[in-house]
Image (cartoon, rainbow, N blue to C red):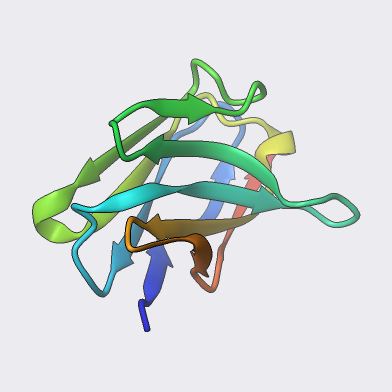
Length: 118
């Protein structure tokens, strides 16, 4: 069983920056896709950013140009650099991963709360 452990959430003022980390318990070299989703009360979980096996990154419209996804394969860690944060970025951020040998199975982290104050 793969474990994904998120860290880096917390309280930040609007306009500020924060970096989230997702550490996997196995190599992320052969991923099908890996990324971040967020959930706010009353809304469905939405894609924030993801990277595919070919290295292509996709971003949600609301974070385009402000958030940057990166990975350190040697550390089995995925990062989400968040800049120019807005109150509407508040939510629980979940790390997600799918691996090549089982691309239809989603692994999820426990989530980390990000709160942006106005």
